[in-house]
Amino acid sequence: MGVLSKTMETHLRSLPKVELHRHLDCSLRWSTAIEIARTLPQFQTMSLTELEQSFLITEPFADLDSVLRKFTSMRDLLQSAEILERLAFEVCEDAVNDGVRILELRFSPTFVAEANPQLKPDQILNAFLRGIARAERTWPIAVGLILIFQRTKTLGELLALRDWALDRREDFVGVDLADSEDRFEPSQFQSLFQPLRGTWPITIHAGETIYPNSSAGMRGAVELLGAQRIGHGIQAIRDPSLLQFLRDRQIILEVCPWSNHLTKSVNTYSKHPLKKLLEAGQFVTLNTDDPGVFASNLIDEYHLAQALGVTIQDFAWMNDVACAGSFLSAEKISRVWPRPRQKLSDLLSTASSQKGPS
Ligand SMILES: [Zn+2]
Image: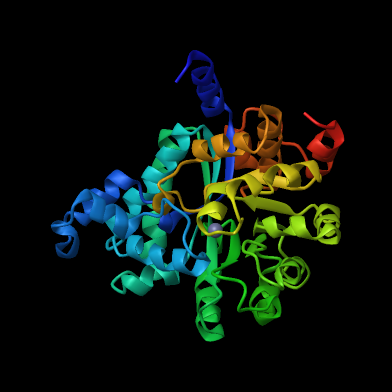
């Protein structure tokens, strides 16, 4: 690495960052994953290469569903409250090392408990909260949890999860809907989300993969489910009227370039629409999605974004957008964010689309 690139690395790392889209239950640090795997009989005799093959995704898979199946291997390691607390603490530590000041972590209690039935939702949440509280006492970082509803669960299971979460409403900063979107309509989840609209802000996974109803999925996420942010949303680039719709409503896109590459949500990485979305004036943010499974970190995403033509000025702007759209309280944000928090409407005038080519 030359002197100039080293300077760039230092600059990128020290840039104050906000990350809005990181799945806590898929973010186990690789060294910790190996350590835990070594304590379990089924993994004890595996070589490092075999462990990598079992847990990590480092090259594009056939599709999103194949990737989602791989997530279940990492989940098998989350067997105790102690491990969950350590996971949460280390995820925050990794984020701090990447310059993150504001971090929103999402998880699905049903996803964790499915493979670890000895853990009840309260135990899972309490363990995560202990790890996060310790991290917030240790470093200048503000962290909030987003509850994920899984599209693949029955309405009965989702309503039970909602009732449980409402009893713990102070412990979540927002809610999300995840899993593959192409087999589901937003309207199927309207009765689930409608009563939550005044309780928590909402983000929805949509517009991630290439499928025929992608645009309707994103519109439905906003109009029917009340989403203020869209997880991914990159397929909006194919639909100019949808781009206008999202911009008019100040909807933030939580873009995760490396994840999109690995799930084949873009044909080739060089065709990733991140820069084009910025130039179209969309409220874009940069995120990791599942760094534990993808063997990545947030700085990797910044380097990958640079390869698409994203500039240092764009990075600062995207972080201001993410700060403006964070679900954390203003008070918590003001404790860690080094500059005044701007409004999304103020950030419109400094968007890439207003500045011309950079
Ligand atoms: Zn995601």
